Image (cartoon, rainbow, N blue to C red; front, side):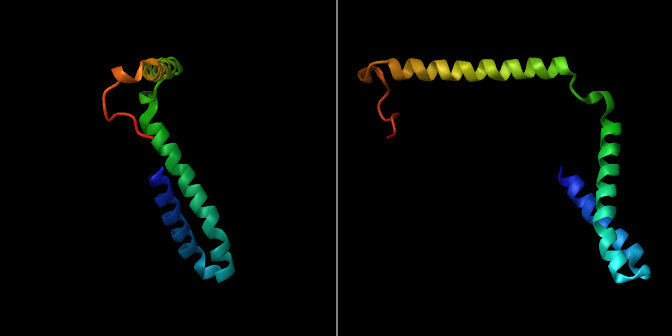
Length: 96
């Protein structure tokens, strides 16, 4: 994402410099448009270069399911620890 920010800034500055001969108002008004167009072109180039390297929907679902299972495991361990009697808990682990 930072790449797109830098491309937008550079593209805006280049557009402003290219439009400067037409007047300062035109140059200032063209900077946001030129920056946005350059960022969109950079996004399309990155998207095209990555191509099939993106995860498919099934891969993303599997990855999400794995993360949810990990989080549920952590929550279960925390519930078991909280349900245990205080004398069986390790000393110094409870912070108020």
